[in-house]
View 1: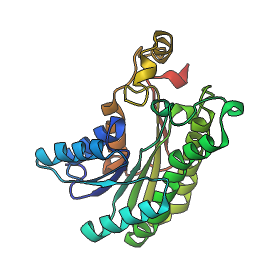
View 2 (view 1 turned 180 degrees about the vertical axis):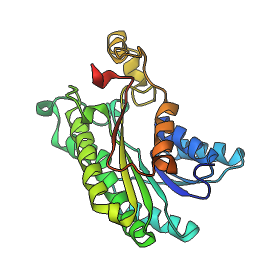
View 3 (view 1 turned 60 degrees about the vertical axis):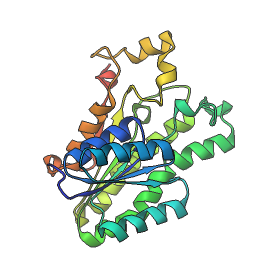
View 4 (view 1 turned 120 degrees about the horizontal axis):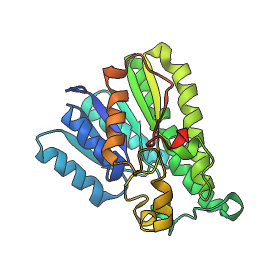
Length: 255
């Protein structure tokens, strides 16, 4: 019960890494708030956790809209009176290619660029903007940002996504420096290729999947492997760690 009675907000918790983290955090005693824009997925994860005898609350949210974020924070504070953990996990990627163009910078329409940045970077900014004052008042808190190996190395073909993920890395560092004095830790996970709905379609392309498998461990990762990394950072097991940028990539970044 590493997170016993902790209130944990997880964005994008309706599928993939976020859903795996929601289940794991709940099993470790957290009261999990599932922030998700897909109502069907969010309710499904909420029901799974509740049926396991654990506590979860689903709130349908578009994290790129400040009014939605303000409403989430208010609802959580009204119900629980505090927020201990924020896992900024939500983002859009290859699975949303029909909605947002994933391409090199010269081929990315401004509207798509702004929408991708709006979700993948501004979403984290908005959650932090409205939750940090609560954590500062509590003199405690834990923020985990989910970036990507795209934020650390040059991965072609999705430049808006890459720019947002690089911003998450830098934002993590400055937030860790700014908020250590308030007993708030801020860390970042940089996943490699993880077998989630975000890249499911891409993995069907043999040429691409072989590239994703081209790490020292020779496989793509599992959502649960990101969840366990997030649990480590969310718990007291990492009590003297802040400002960490943690690749979870099967060693791909070491090549």
